[in-house]
Amino acid sequence: MTRDKADGLIFDIDGVLVDVSLSYPMVIRTAIQWAWRFLLGRRVDKTAFRGEHLLISKRHPAFNDDYDTAWALLCAAASTGEESLRVAFPSPKKWEEELARFRGDDIASWVKERFGEAMPRESMRRLCQELYFGQKDMKEILGEEPRFVRIKGLYRLERPLVQFHWRALPLPVGIYTGRPLSECRLVLRLLNWEDLPRSHMVTLDDGALKPSPKGLELLCERLSLSNPLYFGDAESDRESLRRFGRGRFIAIGPFLKDDPFHFPDVQSALVSLGFMRSR
Image (cartoon, rainbow, N blue to C red; front, side, top):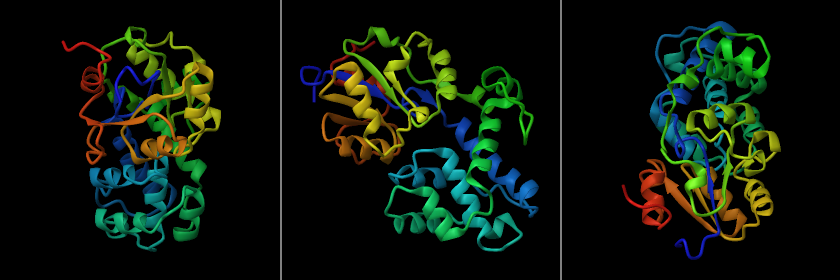
């Protein structure tokens, strides 16, 4: 797939346009420990969540949303009946075995059937959201007061992974992400892409949930594309493109090194594919 064949460039956000290696893992870790102690009333005696848990989740096509990773792991640990988080929390090997038996896309049904719902999914999502935005930006961006925590937003730990403006690229640019629009606005501000039209983005608010191809379908319709490149970092991204049935998936980052079109970062991918000049 070269620039002669592609007619559009579609990007995921996390791990592709923005470095979230410090933000979302910290959100997941903090949410699990906070909920275990203050909502479930159990004992936190270890930092249980590790990077391997996220790596394993990213390789499953249903786990696009990091907030669902936090919720699923919390429910898995709570289902053991143990008081100690250290004892209850699944090891990376155990988590990998659990996900190997999960074949579908419906995380909510799988978690409730397999582990029960120690904490409502929406409550965990709200807790993660408050940790991500922080008290100040919950008020300014969402117009809401926090219900659980009052901290500085962990989104402040994020850094851009690209230094170019979207208008500098030679083809139409779109974004297909699992983030809600409110979180996307923080990213666009960080990238100085605030002029990217809303029609060029498909977010969680549009009802397109990866690995559904719906987001790619919407963007191709809006931007008049037929053969896009989709740059993503997780199995849910790759599966979305596979179900879409057109274009080419470009794997970015450490999670999908088995992909024949794998690159360490977007910049090197765009240079290799002929869309940018090497600096």
